[in-house]
Image (cartoon, rainbow, N blue to C red):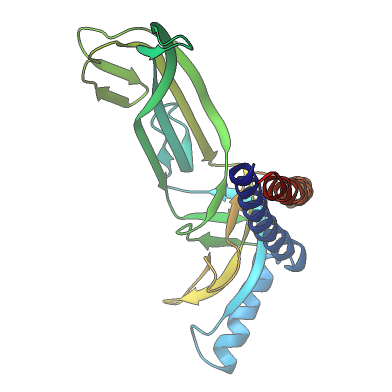
Length: 263
């Protein structure tokens, strides 16, 4: 009981920390005003004339369409995009042995998976909100993308020892022992060119160019979901985290008290 109580308390503390992080994220979105690109350019011009070039540092949101003249091409689906993240997992079945309640050795099987490839890439892009375009430097951003590939391809270990999808290919070593390949799961998400985008970050002028980048302090979010949906989902997650933390802490305290009384 004592160990279970400590585990429940630890889980409650983790949920509280996650709740605080989610509330901070929500607070940044709700307190930051959306700016048109034209307004940001006028603000940069005023700063330039007043205190000199490169002094604009302004937390803001911009909303518009993704524009990129040299987009990336996602590895699995070949989507023209400014961000993608891909993962390939091998799913397998293996034989193992364990002793039953009578101490007899039993042969059993179980399934599992391991990651054989993973990659993430992003590229600078423009946001066009009809009043103008502004550069976005995505370094350090939290990306909220859409899933473009979710596929399972059945198949065991082959003689060639290679898997392919789109431009992706990987030579694989054969599995040894009692482990057998069931197939491969391909997952990829991306932010395609031409889509509506929401960006929360810091507008700054660097090297004579206005851009949105990761702020010195605060949130940096690049999302295909609009602000309203992000806030709605964040509020729901925060509520569940808070409720879960209360339950875990109360349960943990109850188990600790019961354990101490028993001993």
